Image (tube, rainbow, N blue to C red; front, side, top):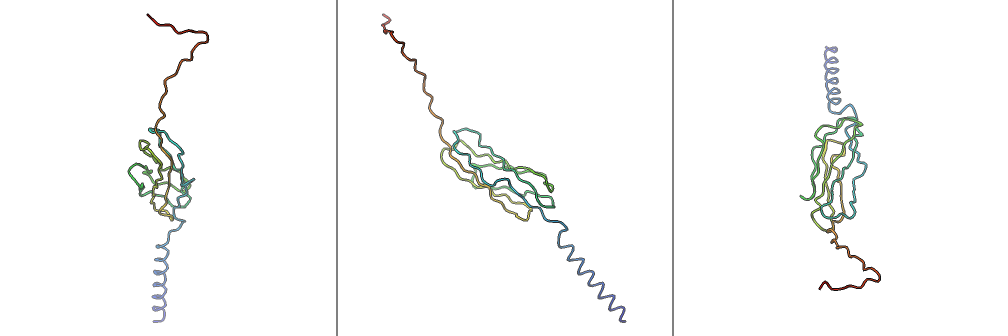
Length: 151
């Protein structure tokens, strides 16, 4: 009887400890590390290329899955990688600002993933100015030249 209860106790403990092991991942979870989270475009001319790529690396030990990218307004579009990023691998979030809108801008892009830092906010800023007006070239007058009429 004592052996049966000891065996039952050992079996229960084995089940309890094995369930703890199943709940915790074996390796360090994915971690997204950006080279920079801010980009200043400076001054742009209307219609200029508003593209910028935020580069990042998965510094964890599990595959990184970017689940979503959400910009603060419709003037900014961000594209995420479709495939999981393996540990040690790098990729980029490509952001494009609509430079047809004049004025100063400051926008955010929120990245969500399965990483241990599941939400990262990227920021872009700058100013879009109109194209400078073109001035027709003026031909300098020649010295000693006296204008005459065509009559």
